[in-house]
Length: 122
Image (cartoon, rainbow, N blue to C red; front, side, top):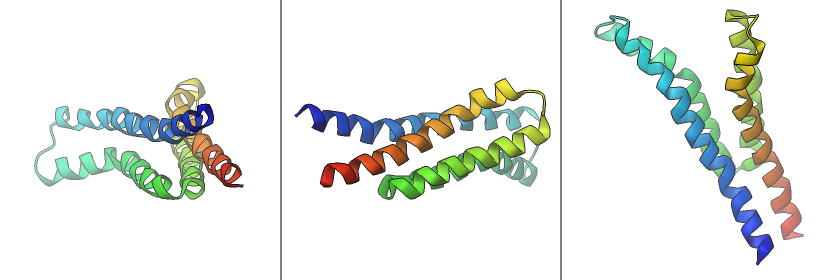
């Protein structure tokens, strides 16, 4: 019984964290409404600001059913986002890592959960 609870917690934790992180990251896109864009410019600016969230949503959908592939996607997105963020602000390593650490943690949790589920079945 205790192991069953452990596996349920490990199953749901990365999913809940991913949803919370996607909502958190998406909040940063709301600043486009203060930039004075109108019409299509507003739509394009909002889409560009939500691009990381869209990528994370796709990774979460994949990870929901295929944890290993989804975990690898999260880790890959974390590396790609770190590369892109450092291109904009190369001196802000701690800030960028504070934002991206959840992506890496979520990816690692999905990978660990995948291998623990395999071990549980054996």
